[in-house]
Amino acid sequence: MENWFKYKIKFFGILTIAFVFAGMSRPTASTSSNAWGFYGHKRINRVAIFTLPPEMFGFYKEHIEYITEHAVDPDKRRYAVKGEAECHFIDIDHYAVGGVNPFEVVPRQWTKAIEKYTEDTLHAYGIVPWHIQLMKLKLQRAFEAKNVDLILKYSADLGHYIGDAHVPLHTTENYNGQLTGQKGIHGLWESRLVEINMEEYDYFVGKSQYLSNPLNYTWGVVEQSHYALDSVLRFEKELTEKFPSDKKYAFEQRGNTTVQTYSMEFSQAYHERLNGMVERRMRNAIIAVGSFWYTAWVDAGQPDLSKLQNIPPSPELLKEIADLDALFEKGEKQGRACEH
Image: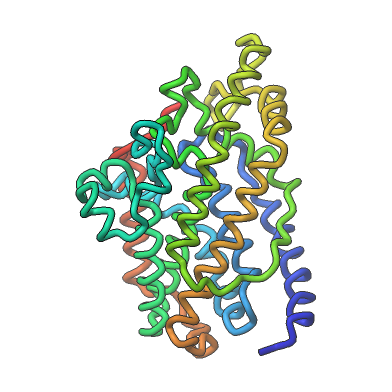
């Protein structure tokens, strides 16, 4: 394997160039209900590529635009596929009956969890930890088959679900503050704060690591996210008591439309109160995505990806994407939505 010091020099150089181009196409802030917002998911997948070892980096760098742009496909499928929404979250607090620690009572293995709670219950309250394992296996099989289309598709999708697992509000029934009079906090935490502060974050997260137990790793991610939830909700409520309504919200122009959003003053006060939480969760998501890609590749026998370079996505995959975009434009979301 190439000396890691030489690879790190290449990493920093290429990453600098990538951020220059990323900044040129930065969209305006939105109140998207999708975890991390479209822009955040794209950034996570894009930067995760630079955590990969040389044997993988060439292939992923060649397809960096695909993996970046299609980081949001799972959210688009919410508008097309019934049952997609539950793959993005887990309401772990639903299982905290009588004040028990849900991470001690919910079995980590899917089959054992079904035996205890039934499959219908698990789907009703979210399956993101288990869905990540399924997507990792699908990516591994794609590597084994040397199928470029499926490697690209599952890499982009897996990155999305891992990103979702790093969001505290994706671990609770109170996912949009609707149970505590904080409706809209979903988009505030994972879209508004990210999009107005993202260029200030530190993305040098190191190199991907092999995960000896991906399922346990995922549950650790979910647990970390959930333990941050109290601060996410409490800090917003404390600040709301200090900000009058006309200072908490503002109107911004988005194209030809004027929309209400959280004011810059309130957003930045909340971001500061969180003390780096959003950046930490995003950094953790980036290294996790790279590590899952790397682990799937290793478990597939480390196929030579250089032999798969210069193979573009097939017309069939491009058609599938076009069909998904068409359904997304119709706007008929299936399953849970996080209205603001």
